[in-house]
Image (cartoon, rainbow, N blue to C red; front, side, top):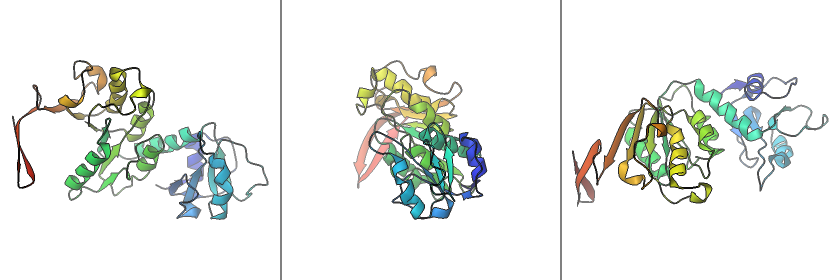
Length: 271
């Protein structure tokens, strides 16, 4: 990514200010992981266990001069730095990711489910990396913070994106969908992980499927959605999505009839 600080200020709707000229190429949330200080923008994220504002001076001493904050900084504090003040630093981080994603028309695979997201992402990468220049989530960067960090990695050389999205409670998937904006959806399955954040399994399924609101193609295993409702439900995915499902038990796009292990290879027969 590469943005003038003035453009970043507009994207995140920062309070009026006179910004010193700077180019932002890297997003930073951890003062211990500074590699390119002059071109980094530090987001002072605040949560239950950490206040990023407490690490601004450390980042400044390491050479960072551009910060997004939610607290007014004293005029005399780091006077040669830019402080972009916003009401919510996390939402500002996500706004930058949304704006960055909109610059690119590449196909993007969005993966969600109760488990297996990272494994599926890496399998797809291994299958496709010889034919595509792929940008993908580092490790398991699938949270409200991890997704914008992942999406910010998209550049002009990429022609396919693979990003995972994880949620722990209702109301979280909408922001992830906007940042990832997947064109292809993959659902790994519905399990018990993070069930305490939802009233029931159907609510959890519906929340996860918000990731697929605008996809062109949706891929899922019918056997992995649980006893929640008839499926597919038009309200759970894009209205015009092509549905590709598979099952060992019931009618599907691909019905698996048999599986055999031969020389450590799984041979699947379907119809």
